[in-house]
Image (cartoon, rainbow, N blue to C red; front, side, top):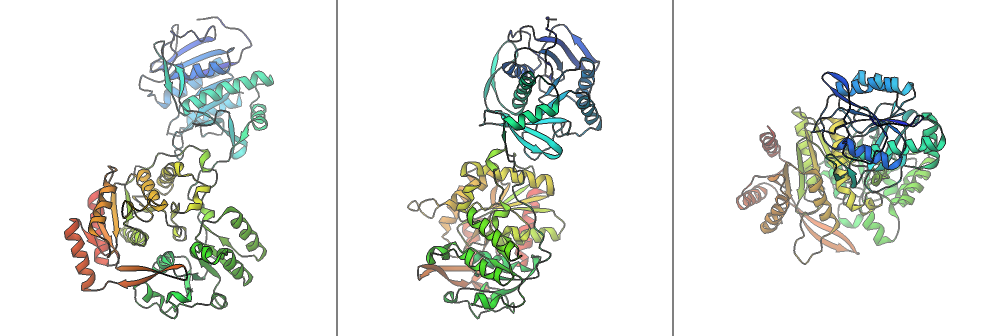
Length: 611
């Protein structure tokens, strides 16, 4: 073995070994151990079965050149080991007593013996540093033990950052992007990942020890907090689940497409919809709300006077998308109607994603009147660009897309969700519709421009993957539904691709659906439907297995600068003929999702696909 200097910082690296052909180490190496079935065996000539351990040691060396190095080889050439070898290596560290142990590794198994030895080493003054999982919502050990400093990679930031963990525990963030490192056989390689961020953290902490002349872990962590940038983590992309148990009776305004869905599935809400309010010139006032959406009479007659309607038994007002009205009237109507409701002691839920200043102002006003104010902002986490995202899900994914807006995509998702749950399936939803959170769905409103304040377009694919991973880990579903916004392709080459079309493409790339349900409208041209199917299937994921046709046809008109619709509901033979026509032309099943028999048909198609 090479010589070494006394009173050096002692560093142990538990990894794939060390390549002896590299000269960067100088006299730093003190001992090399091979951990195998025979136990921990000291070897004279260091070897590296993979190159990973040499790379980690090289990164540490770039941070600090004077140290005593103890190498434990636990990995084979495929970076495979077992928990037993890791525990043996850590037990042996009690003998050589390093100041720092670098663990650029992790296991999915939370072993009580592994936790115990980490705690014992920590109590003895040894600093353990371990790499977190590359997937945000997968826990790995030993990184998640309180006794260990967890390190997460960042492909952009060069300087060390930290985030506060529970019970005064810190998580460190360091560069994990592509970098040139020493490898096996005397060669160099380009590598990246959390492992190398962990090695960098080891070198940085060794440098801090030298700088402050103390090996006390608490003093080192305090130094990091005083001298490094604090990072805000956003691990939960769907926001918290809200308890609506204190809300009893609600009014909804205006009666637009999102409110149609809320009203159609009102039995699944945790409160009653007692009043429906709408704009007088749209022609719905004094009509039954059920009749307006093509259902049987509900007994709720649509009103027009907002202030009068919320005077009596109502305790909550649900505001729909008022952005177009606000633009036409040049007023912030969310603020106007929220303030009017607060003054009457009513709670307010807005399904809009508001500008941050408006959101904060309305929160303050609601507190003044002791009312609840909630909007989509409560479900979109801040600082999402500052963390490493997840890798998606291994659960079956069914994505629901449409040929355009108002094709019944959200209705299809909820119909199938509740039908599948009735027959015993665990169903999770990633809702891109802004009102999804009212039904307890995980919500990320991709079609909303204000979302760009929180999640830039280039990060949205990763954000959905992270949400899919989170849902997989926390809800443990049998199947996951996702959905898109508007259409997937423009109606013609002369029409610019709008943001909603882009958001549908983002959903496809992120969710990699195993199966697609395409929502179509009675007035759709067959060639356009086929072009949409071709576009979806060209991504190479799931095929369009079924089309779901809404019974509602719409002709868009304008009045006073505001778009509104003349609606026609297909019924009886009309809808049967239209369904048959599309099925013959498209060559795949076409269903009316509001018919119980067609819902059963869809479930069978899903079961056959994933059985």
